[in-house]
Image 1 (cartoon, rainbow, N blue to C red):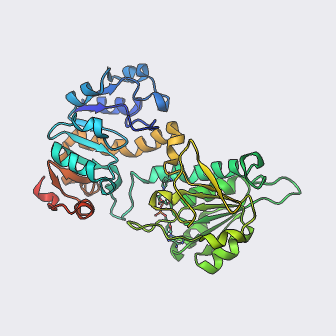
Image 2: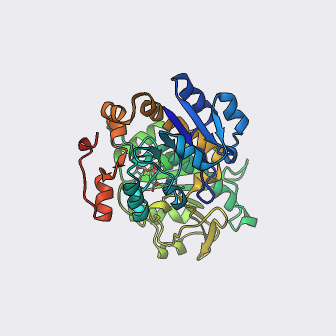
Image 3: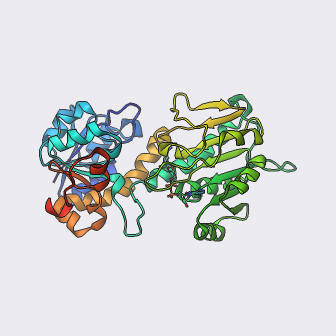
Length: 370
Ligand SMILES: NC(=O)c1ccc[n+]([C@@H]2O[C@H](COP(=O)([O-])OP(=O)(O)OC[C@H]3O[C@@H](n4cnc5c(N)ncnc54)[C@H](O)[C@@H]3O)[C@@H](O)[C@H]2O)c1
């Protein structure tokens, strides 16, 4: 199959969908890979590295779309790319159709085959192509939190791990899923006292078993959270109720229970945030203060570490991309239910219920388009 890797053009997107290592894998199976010049630059991969791995470097995005049977990307196509997409062309990328009506209509019109990273789903209902970004964001939450706890950055002025003779900081992690687990591990590794709260007792039981001794688990309820925030200096929001807006676990009135200079990192901001006072921020202007409490609410945290994020994402996407290339999308999806779940819009038909519901479009059973 002919694979095309365009350079991401969405503002501040520095990730790339295939690394030179990925090119080597595609070539091993007899495929050819065309990479737009500088596609990997933001993630630290040069054209020379791609060429050495066997890719052909193309200078214009138009050439990549024109030649490719499968386009592999990171972010959804933006308006200037719509016209480049060909009928029957396979697009494998994040789409988030339910948040853009214009994109949905554009992809229907182009009659492309749109397989969305975010809806590829395992039998246990986990989302393997979203997990890596949660891992990155969870780990980063502590790094960012530690930074903004420094006095010159507006924080309380405390070192998470303390030193001999000085107590470590208390870190509260709301939600013990992927984000929460990674955040707790990082904070614990730095020597902080960590508490994870979750509503799932099974999850708390698991975390209690695997976490180091400086991590406690507590059932999530308002009473416990009100109590814990009084002594916590860094609070990480990592809750998720699939398909719904995040619940507000910290309301505005609760801020006055906290010490001035407390830092709150709302990783769940992409689902509306789990603090009432959260509003989405950017890497250019990541924090603001409410009632003396520093809020960090960057909606695309992994974007700040494109090298790590690209490798984490492509480690997860490459095995699926190889199946698509080796078998063709119809056979690959028929053979693998996980990939089948990724099909959203196929040759003008909306085959994902969440998308047809979101925009009041007619729904077609995916088996009719295979
Ligand atoms: N800002 C970013 O850049 C970024 C990056 C990646 C992920 N995220 C977001 O982070 C959030 C968490 O993602 P995840 O992958 O860890 O999800 P996850 O499903 O793995 O974990 C969510 C956890 O929240 C728990 N939970 C639900 N309601 C709760 C409540 N009331 N109190 C306490 N815990 C509760 C669940 O039981 C679950 O364990 C999501 O909204 C995700 O979209 C943001």
